[in-house]
Every structure is written in C-alpha cells, then in structure tokens.
Amino acid sequence: MYSESTQKRPVVIMERNNAVEFLLGGMATCAAGFFTNPLEVVKTRMQLQGELKATGQYNIHYRNAFHAFWTIARNDGVTALQSGLVPALYYQFFMNGVRLGIYQVLINMGFTHKEGELSIPRSIAAGALAGCLGASLASPFYMVKTHLQSQAVKEIAVGFQHSHGSMSEGLRAIYSEHGMLGLWRGVSGAAGRVTVGSAAQLSSFSAAKDMVVKTKIFPENSWLNAFVASMLSGLAVTMFMTPFDVVSTRLYNQGLDSGGRGLLYSGVGDAFIKIFRTEGLWGFYKGWAASYFRLGPHTVLSLVFWDEFRKLYLSIGELEGR
Image (cartoon, rainbow, N blue to C red):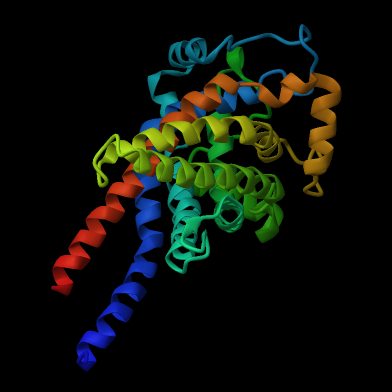
C-alpha cells in the first residue's frame, strides 16, 4: 500500500508539468525566432511584392530569397534584417506558448492517442485547436511585426508603408485610431494561417518522430530524432500554410480608411478571391522559397528546442521526485 505522500506525488508532478508546458513552448519558439527573424523579413517583403498586380505590371525588387537578403541589407542596412524582432518574439512566446502548451497538455491527457497508438486525425484536431487559440491571442503582435518588417526605403518599398517606429508606438497608434478591436484586425486570417499550419506541423512532427523512433536509427532520447522529424514536418507546413500565410500578411499590412475598413480586402474570402483573380494561383505561393527557408529552420529549431527543454524539465522533475 502507498503512503499518502506517495499517492499525491504523481498528481503534483502532472499539475506542474501541464502548467510549465506553456512556458516551455514559448521559450523554445523565442529561441528559434531570434535566429529566423531575418528570414521572416524577407518572406514578408516577397509576399507583398506585386500585390494585386498581374505579372509584368510591377517592378521586381526581390527576385528570390537570396537577392532579397542582399537588396534589403544594401538599401535599408543590415540591421533591417532584424526589423520587427521585438514584436516577433512576443508573438512567438504568446502564440506558440499557448499552441505548444495546449498541444502537449492534450498529449498528456491521452487525447492524441487511441488504444495506445498515435491517432493522426486526433493529432490534426489537437494541433488545429491549439494553433487557432494561440494565433488569436497573439494577433496584435503579429500585426505590428508585419508593419515594421514591411517598412523600406522608397526604392524597394512594397505594400502599404506604416510609420511606426517601434512595437509600443505601433500598438498605441492602432489602439488610438481604431480601439481595442483594431488590435485584432486581421485575426481571421491569422487564425486560419496558424490553424492549418499548426495542424500540419504538429501532426506531421508527431507522426514522423514516432516513425523515426521506431526505426531505432538513433538512440531513443537523441535530439536527432526530433531533428529528422522536424525537417519532414517543415515540408508539410510550407505546402499547406503558405497560401494562408500570404493572405494573412496582406490583411495585416493593408491600409485602412477613416472607418477602419481595409483599403484592399474586406476579409479572408475577399482576399483569396482578389489574389486569385489578379495574381493567379502562383500569387498564393509568392515567396514560397523564402517561406520554406524560414519555416524549415524555424520548425527544426522550435521543435528541437521544445523537445530538448521538455527532456531537461522532465529529468529535473524525476530527480526531485526521488
């Protein structure tokens, strides 16, 4: 028979584990975001290039991801490659802290498994729910991040140019002009973007890691299991999320009229229709390479950091529980 303290110990560890999952998710993606933010700047510029214009009707400032790096550094300065870093890290912490935290809690509860085996449909549902909630909460930070990252000198400017000098200035200006609801303008696009991306990322990562671990190519606790799984996951995310990513960027960055209505798009559906009519199917994959260059490393770094942070936390918990 167990003593009272022994009976309570697993409950205490599980409660602590679930609470810390949110912090671990935020920490992991902030660490990744610091390294991948320049790729986010490049991706944002390329997605805004030629907005609602057919091929041949606009100047091409950024021919590809590598040319965009060079062009931004030469015209805006090297530091411009880290534009929007502060709101980007806030966004990563709150969005992914909630997203990865909720997803791991659902794993801890056994939701993503059925009869002891990983359930792909359940993993997709868990990832979609977690992503939608995380994106909705952190939407204001993503908006300001997009505004700051699109700012450029006139010679290479694309999209609507906002005049914020910092994250705090941007949040104050948006709230002053459009109220609390203005801070969540474009959230429908962001929710769709992260819902699709999160479902693809977390379900594919879980499935890929489960498969890699079963092959026993690497030791069970090796970080290489997470690395290989996250590389495969990055491909899935890029394919499914890029169209929603383009729409989300356009909705966030567009200018507003005096009534707070978008100058170009009235919502997600309107954006999809207008982009398809004027830019064609390829319009949804503008900056596709930049998206992968950003999503690939970010997915790898985020999930590897997340996996390693969790192993460290669990090992500390085991030591304390002895």
